[in-house]
Amino acid sequence: MARLTSDARERNEQAVRAAMDRLLSGNLPPRGKCDLKTLAAAAGVSRTAFYPKKNRDGTTRPGPYQHLAEEFARRLKALQKAGQITDPRAAQIERLKAQLAELKDRLAKRDESLAELTAFKTLAISRLTAQHEEIERLREQAAAAGNVRHLPATRPGTAPYGSCS
Image 1 (cartoon, rainbow, N blue to C red):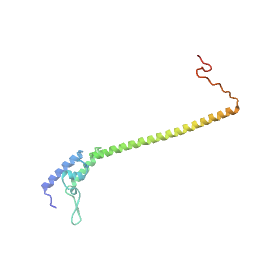
Image 2: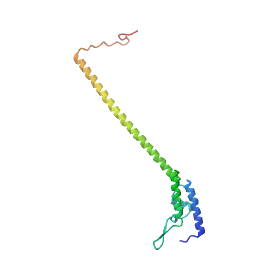
Image 3: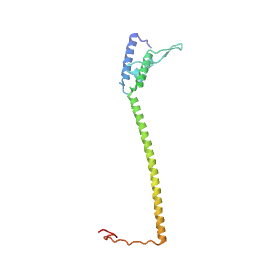
Image 4: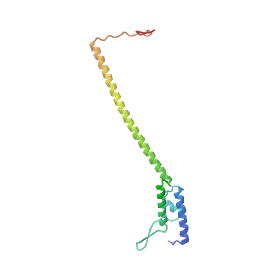
């Protein structure tokens, strides 16, 4: 691979800084994130230039644009700490997480309400059953005693006893 001239390196650094400003302002390319891969693609440089290199003797040396990658990470972290989300997908993820938490809360409240209504229904049915059994018992007791007199049924069109008409 050919070595970069100082002019080419300066042009690439300017392109990386311009791309960095665009990405951090939220102007992301389609399907792009606010990361080094997108930064490299937007600046037109190799992504590997942002990472340290190994010499033939095994020692490491900084990549040509590693300082820019560190600056990008620092600026991105500062924006995130300030509450600004430069990546629209990250903002969508945060919005969906908040919506999910709200829906889980609503679901828990609904489940609690259903449990209360089910308990109320069970209690009401139990009470109605007890009242029905009591009525049946009293009817049987009244029929067994034989001292209950049945009133005559009224004919249609006649006034009941004690009518004010």
